[in-house]
Amino acid sequence: SMAAVLGGDADAVAAALEANGLVPANHNGGGQTVVAGPADAIAALAADPPAKARVIPLAVAGAFHTRYMASAVERVAPVAAAATVQDPSLPIWTNADGSRVDDGRRFVDLMVQQIQSPVHWDAVMESFAAAGVTGIIELAPAGALVGLAKRGLRGTPTVAIKTPDDLPAAIDLLQSAGQEADATA
Image (tube, rainbow, N blue to C red; front, top):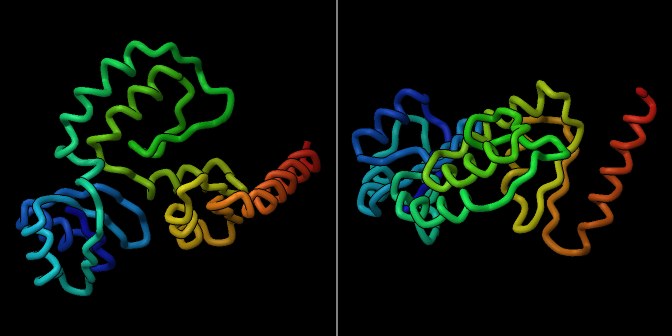
């Protein structure tokens, strides 16, 4: 199972996870960590959270982005290894560590490993800020990442595309970014 841990001292949260046999699945920034492990361990953490932390159990189908997904990696890795890939033509940042990825094969390998490795959205937002990213568009299912970005990248415009009705706002954001790029060129 999984739970969101909101707040608390980072060291105290890490100690509570270890004490309960839980692992981090998502480092979301802003004092939010999603953790995973056995349902009874999640319940124990929720019953006795670290000081100044709230634990919110999540309704999920599995403990994604953790060692519990290793069997999925074993099935996906050979298919990914056989795929023909190209280097990206647009910037791509990896959730593995927030770095920019310019090599197509490395990107595919990182995606496969991401199945069983924690997401570091906090590091991605730091990289976005350092790179001067001026807007974020999240594709469906959408909302979680732009919600985190609104707190972690204050002032950066965001659009969550949940339905076709959201496309005009995304187009407007892209057009405004293009106009800003033209003005600085």
